[in-house]
Amino acid sequence: MTRADSRRLQPEVPFLYEMVISFFHAARIALDPVLQEIDGYRELQTDQHGGPVGPDHVARKVAELPIGDIFGHVGACLSATTNLGLAYVHSFRLLSFLTQNKDALPPNATKPHLAKLYDALPSASREALRRAYDGVGAHDFEIELRASPSSEPTRSETSFSGRSFRSALAYWQSHGMLQDSHLSLSSASRASVIRVFVPFRSVLVLDRILADQVAPTLGLDYKTMDQQMSSRTEDPELKWDGGMIYVSLPDKLGRLINATWIPGITSVVRIRESGTEEWSPGFETPFNKCSFVGLKPDTEYDVQVTHKNEAGEGEPAVFAIKSDPRTA
Image (tube, rainbow, N blue to C red):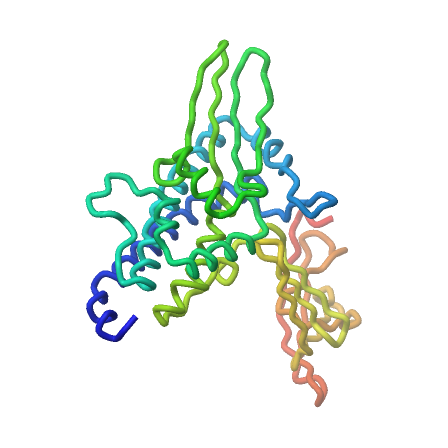
């Protein structure tokens, strides 16, 4: 794209980019509590050939939820798929502007077609999108909710296993999963069935497209989902061996952020019952919180804290506490 082209497209491109980011962000916010509830962030197993194994745990998780929670998640998925579909449509339009200086969406199009928008991109862009799709090791889920006299269980399926990116786009289009919200409801033989699409892999794929294809072309700093995740499925682990502190921080994609360091200052804590003279043996800690066990209930204690570094211990600070009346 020439500098003149960039100037001519300047009003259109930033608008499309902000539109994509807004729809994508809305999809992620709607989808996150669903994935947390059904354990959708869990790393899934593969078979002996390396292919993905269906996520049976998703169906079990959903079946255990109260009916009100289930349909709350159905609504969240409908919002997520609608916004995600719009984000995909406009990201393909944006890529077409950036690579071909034209809109991939035909004039007066009443309904965008994802696979056709993909086909309208140059071969190099299609290949880059295919690599992004193949490089995401996660699943989309289809959850089936069934209410019938036989009480058939809720079940889930893995979408797009073995499909190419282009085939996945066509599948989304034919089922109305993205821009129309994927929800099918049928009633036959006194059975009601609802199928809901949970587009986790689709979200991750678009995240990679924005990070690898769109943002660099625009010269923007884009943070991927794993860089922004603050909510975790597991608690962080924090250990100290007397010298080194070890921290293990898991994210929602099952990856770990590990860190180690030697604290420059530690604290030495001692305790005694008020009115007595003997302090307990001091214990050293690099952390700013501690708890005591084995205290007498409803009793006042003195706590002494000194800070320690390579030069030794500093002046002590003493303060009083009172144990809980229910302390065992």
